[in-house]
Length: 207
Image (cartoon, rainbow, N blue to C red; front, side):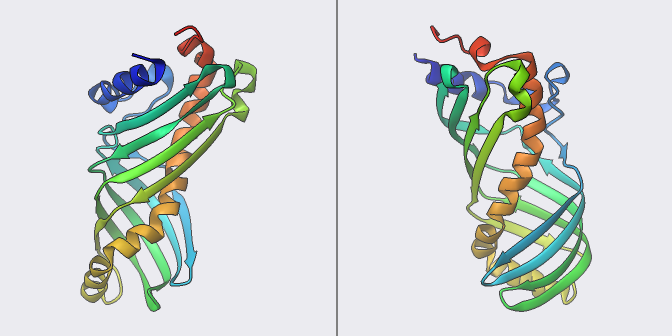
């Protein structure tokens, strides 16, 4: 098998190993995975939302599947695709704005159950340890669908019903925000991994 197939096979065999984190590589536990507090702004022709979050907690983050990979050690680059088939999340939120042209606001706890989240990624400039601070991560995720339940919304029952009736549209609207959340979570780990292992050492050009 070539280097790309070996990477996919090895990465997908580590689900349970990474579930509790790998402290020596700076990887925090992935089930649950608690994100830093985040403020999210969503703007589109039909959405104008500001959301302040605390304790953004992901469940089953470890249950990923890499579906493609292109490892280029000489270029310090890794690209590919990864799927999260059954990610869940909960968060304390404060929300204000408009969604699908309706005013929406409130504060409380929100819970999400996602259909598959498919992400394309590019890690670049993974070269020498001295340049790890400049490592680049591009990540574009698409959420297929999402089940939602918000407590504390104004007109809570009606808004939850409306959100779930429009779930695929909501999933599409929030996909860029989740791409940014995942980037913020992964970038510190990649920098630590780079400082420990230049890409050429992990994947020697002759491999």
